[in-house]
Amino acid sequence: MAKSALPFSSEDSYAALLDGLKTQIRSAQVKAALAVNQELVQLYWQIGREILTRQQTQGWGGKVIDRLAKDLKREFPDMQGFGSRNLKYMRAFAAAYPETEFVQQLAAQIPWGHNCLLLDKIKDPTERRWYMQQTIANGWSRNGLALQIEGGRYGNQGNAITNFEHTLPSHQSDLAQQLIKDPYNFDFLTLGQDAQEREIERGLVDRIRDFLLELGVGFAFMGSQYEITVDGKDYRIDLLFYHARLHCYVVIDLQMGEFEPEFSGRMNFYVSAVDAYLRSGGDSPTIGIILCRSKQKTTVEFALQGLQKPIGVSTYQLNQNLPDAFKTNLPTPEQLEREMDAAIAALAPE
Image (cartoon, rainbow, N blue to C red; front, side, top):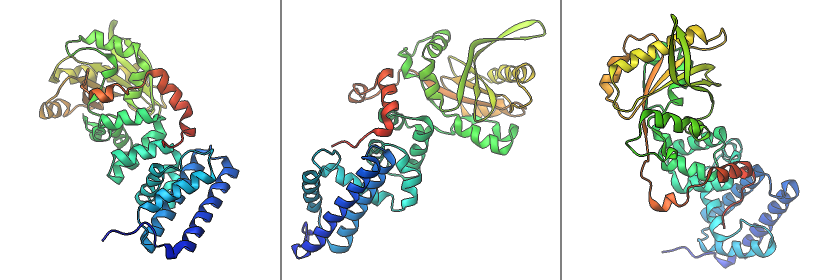
């Protein structure tokens, strides 16, 4: 038997709930005018918890949310965020995160719209927490977060085949492994599958901002076709970066086809040269990343065995097919920049 919206013998209890919510909302208005994201998200969590608690303990049905929406909107006509849909998000938010410490320390650090997106798209609590942490670290806009979820960013972390465990200290090995993903998505290049290596490299340099976003937080671009001289002969590194968190140089070598064992030998040479001629006393060991169109696990593992330099092998994708409906919603770089600037003040959708 379905629960009624509200046993109206409990009208006094409902009135107390409504009055309490009015007080909480006015208090938040005074503190931050609901403009500070942390206050807003914590207020929404409190409202959601109140609704959830009353429904669980007093048997109120779902229609009470519609009634609350009308009363709150009447009381606060100039404020957004108190529609039925958003109140349901608040209830789901409180159900998903019962601990106030988690809300204060993590969920409240990202805009409400991001939280709603995560509630809709991600069911696993560990994965949701990871996307929150990455949003904070990378400053992802709501559209940017949606792109990362759609592209399966969580599942791609740490999938590269590396020899880091044997060539780096344990604390750096774990961090380096997590920072390198597989595959990398180069859709932003708008190149076909038959693009040549130099076209891809030029495209990555021309769209360096997008490339850095795809690589992840911490990468600083040092140059392309970076020249380094060994025994009087000039060699050119495809792409050279420095990583602020790892405190090391990162050499990236682009390859057009499937991974071949000789790629690891050339990368070992490049990493050794950078260590010898560029690395300073405060830098950690240089890391090499070989980016290929495809790879075979056993071949890569055999090629990396016995090498003393830290090297990882990942793949990349060009012109990945996205659903047409999703493509029409892709933001421009200018829109992304505006959203990142305004993210902290983002309000909930009605």
